Amino acid sequence: MEKRKKIRVMIAKPGLDGHDRGAKYIARALRDAGMEVIYTGIRQTPEQIVNAAVQEDVDFIGLSLLSGAHNFLFPKVAELVKEKAEDDIILFGGGVIPEEDIDFLKSKGFRAIFTPGTSSDEVIDFINRNVKP
Image (tube, rainbow, N blue to C red; front, side, top):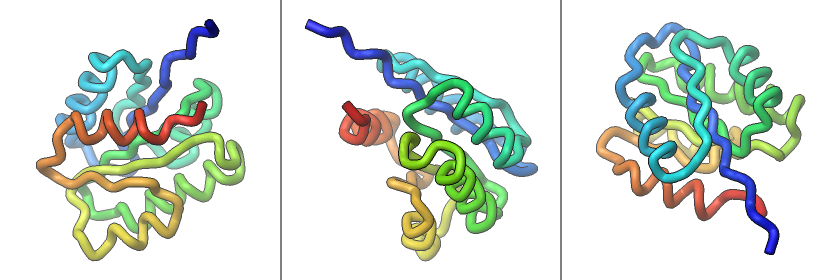
């Protein structure tokens, strides 16, 4: 029986947002669930995030943002992922994101948006349900 490779997830903080407690919490939860997690640290450009994701051959990119710039930065990451990785990387996001912006972000390529109060189990379940075979 062939052993499945570990799920690889990049957690990234685009833009100038310096608050990373939630991103680190999710990164630890995913690692504890058996996933391989790459955390980029704060203040990353969309280009840095996507280049690192392609180099690291990740299955998912999870963006965390609290600064309000999600309607600009998230679509930019999605656009670069389409250019450089086609549909090989699944996108999700989280942070302080108003309900009225979620459909817009999903239309730009984000499979899920998690808001404050989401349990780590919900994020883990999302990844396990959406990982490509």
